[in-house]
Length: 100
Image (cartoon, rainbow, N blue to C red):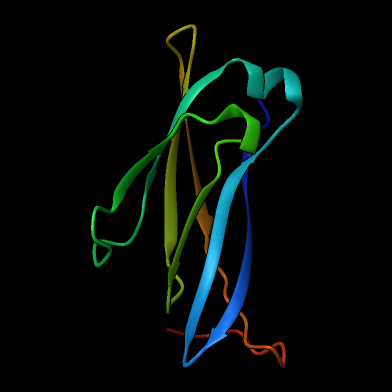
């Protein structure tokens, strides 16, 4: 099963980004997912978050200042679970990647 996490970000200034992550997969696979549980860095308030919005590809939107590994579990309607991870990358407007 080919599932992966995709991301986007927008630099807001003062070392702060708004960013989003979602499941990148074929529509047929997305239709079989019931929900996705994201585990963010422990410094986030409520680091474990859930999305059950199929129309957004189970998108999670938040903001922060540093890079870290995002862990995700896709819970399928048939009871199966698929685990994924993604290294969140944030860049300044000049293309420099933040190292925080």
